[in-house]
Amino acid sequence: MKAQCIVCHERPAAFLCVQCHKPVCDECAFKDENGVFCSRECAARYRSYKQTQRPPVRRRPGGMLKGVIVGIVMAVLAALAAWKLGYLQITP
Image (cartoon, rainbow, N blue to C red):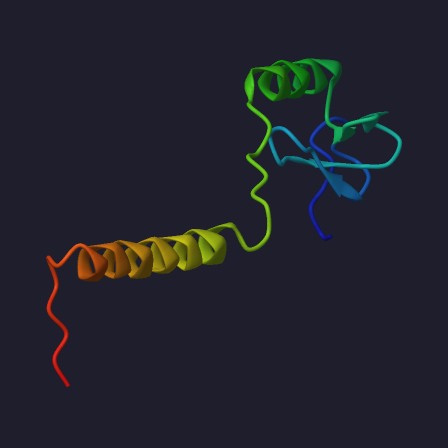
């Protein structure tokens, strides 16, 4: 990273702030469990932002395929029932 630190303007940047994406050196960086920030204010804004976000929806693997298979089975069963009741004529 060739950019200069936006805090001290003397050292080359080692990180980008997680919140504002501004370059910051290792000595000026504010580090916490969420990452590296250029200031405590950016860290607070990031925590506030994260608290307002909903967690991602986790879908079970194969959910769509299962739905398609169930739909096909239901269609076959409906056709079979219609044939048994005489609503559907199958001629060879």
